[in-house]
Amino acid sequence: MSDAAPPACCPPSDDRPDLRPIEGDEADQELAALAKAVGHPARVQILRLLARRASCVCGEIVDELPLAQSTVSQHLKVLKDAGLIRGEIDGPRTCYCIDNRALRRLKALVGGL
Amino acid sequence: MSDAAPPACCPPSDDRPDLRPIEGDEADQELAALAKAVGHPARVQILRLLARRASCVCGEIVDELPLAQSTVSQHLKVLKDAGLIRGEIDGPRTCYCIDNRALRRLKALVGGL
DNA sequence: GAGCTATATCGTTAAAATACGATGAGCGAC
DNA sequence: GTCGCTCATCGTATTTTAACGATATAGCTC
Image (tube, rainbow over all chains, first blue to last red; front, side, top):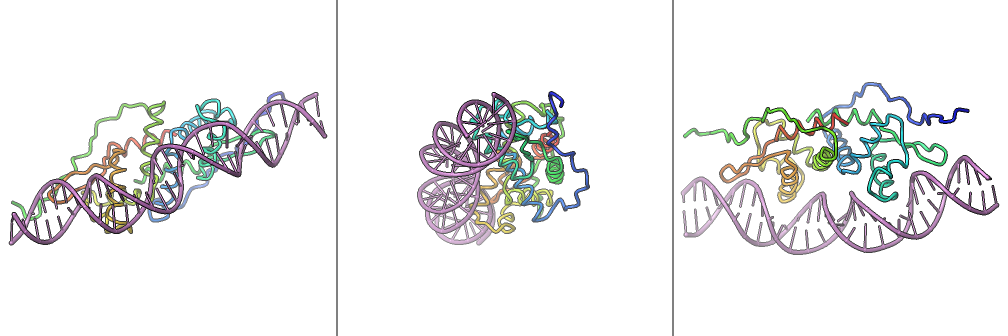
C-alpha cells in the first residue's frame, strides 16, 4: 500500500500510574540495575537516539556509533534486559524503542535519592 | 570545648546554578559515569544512608552493610571518584556526605533522557 | 612514647563487562 | 528454491569490578 509504511512497532507508552515504592530493598535493587544499564556512554547514546526519533530505529544505531554491529547488539540487549527499551521484529529488521514506563521509573527512583 | 561538637564536615550544599548542558557528548559521558557509580545495590544503600542522616556518618556505614570494611571502603571510593559523595577526615575517622551538587546534576541528566 | 581505633590501601582471586570477528537464523526479493 | 540483507548469538581475549583478608597510615588517649 503506502510506500513508507511506518513500522508502528512501538506501542503507545503505558500511562498507568506506577505504584511501586520508591525506597526500600527492592527499590534499591531496581535502581542499581537500571543505573547499571545506563552506566555506559554507548548505551546513553542509544537511549538518546531512540528518544530523539520517537519512532524506532534499528540498525541505524550501528551507523551512529563507532562500534561493531555485534557490540551494539550487546548493548541493546543490556538495555532490553533492564527493561529500558523494547525490540520488535519488523520483517527482516528489528525495531527498538524506549520503554517509557521503565524510563519514568528510573527517573522516579533517581529523583527519590 | 563542646562535648559533642558536630563534625560539621559537610559543607553547606552548593546552590549555584549548574549551567552545563544536559545533552551532548560530554553530558553523555558524565551521565554514564554517574549512573555507573550508582549501579550497584551497596552503593545505592550508601547513598540512601547518607541522605537519611543529613549529617555525615562514617564507619557506621560498614555496620549497616553486610560487607567487609575494605569492600565498603572501595564502594565509598567509587562514589567519591564519581563526585557523588565527599569525605572529610574528622579526627580518627572519616566523615562522608552527599555532594548535593553532583546529585542534582545526576537528576538533571536522568531527567533529560 | 605505646597502644587503640578507624579507615585506606595492597594483593589476590573470581566473576562480570566490553569488545571483536565469525557464525547462524529469519525474512524478502528474485 | 537461492541470494542478500539484517540482526542475534557464539566464541574468545582483554579489561574491569567486586569481594576478601592482611597490612599500612593517621590520629586520639593514656
